Image (cartoon, rainbow, N blue to C red; front, side, top):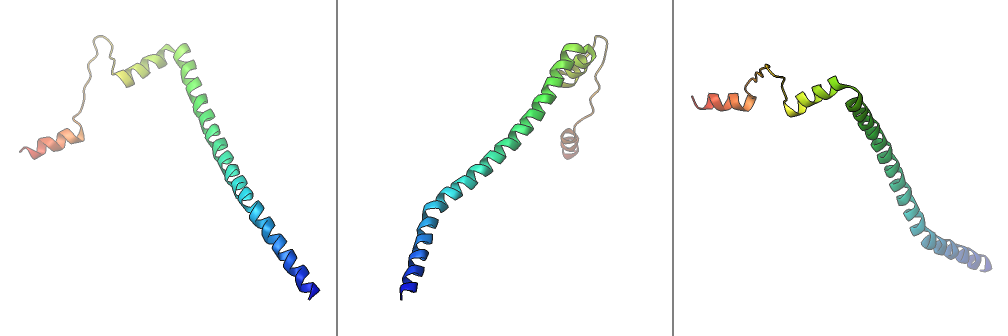
Length: 99
């Protein structure tokens, strides 16, 4: 009988400890996962910053690079140059549909 009371008390004690510490443990796990996700995001942003720093460096030091980027992004052409554009797929499809 005494042995059953000790076992019951031990079981209740363990149950109480689980009820007390389980929510804290779950929260700790969630925070660890959140921290790991933040570290991964920081690493990706650092890589992106390195790429942007290199872009800035090239823009400051390489006039040919600046010219190429301006041509690509802004469609700038030199005096005397001509731009030939082929029709887009959408324009080609629209032209075929009106026949």
